[in-house]
Length: 290
Image (cartoon, rainbow, N blue to C red; front, side):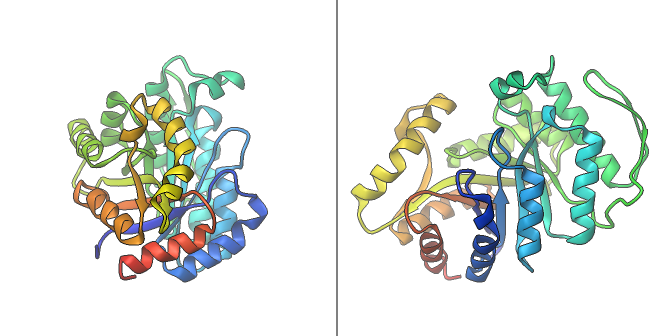
């Protein structure tokens, strides 16, 4: 697994003030990525990314994901540019539709989620390249906006999407695609096909989030995972037993990572559940020989 990036998620339920210590410890264990979450009512993704970047020296920090309806593309580009200027080469930003019910609850649900996501990603990418953006779109209007301090190294933008038309859109307009927890090797091959249909180039990256629980007792591992796989199975519309996880003994978890890599994953981000997440992370990395 020489080219596979291994990341860890700072779970949305963990206290924000504990992020700096976690980030430093995860970096010391040798992870490539640390991903933060932006879900409505939890933590701000850009601010959390800034905290994680400031607390570390090497690790790449991913934002997974900013909901397009919740943020002006001009403001999002400004925020990302600031981080990319201060921490060049260490940021990747995910943008998605946002949970529809959440967007409705704050009055920002678009009439066309696909149009909004496409217009957001294309305009943010252009702004980060230092371009002047004129857009009279279906969902957005930008009248000659340009960044005064664009990044010298624009961060990659990845689309956090699930459905076929959105995956095609990601292949057309984003630098990569971010796949939610629960998706397995068969899903990844389908994702690659759909992003390619949309026009994805060979360098279009695939980042996969995955529930992770590692332990010596299979029964305890299953019990720990159960509420997560049950809820996610309902969200994905598939039986709980078909929700893919990186779990079991450290060797078994390493095998599951290999399955995802073989199916096309470039980066796998572990969403660790259960006690001692850093201990679990260390066990997985050791099993991988890292």
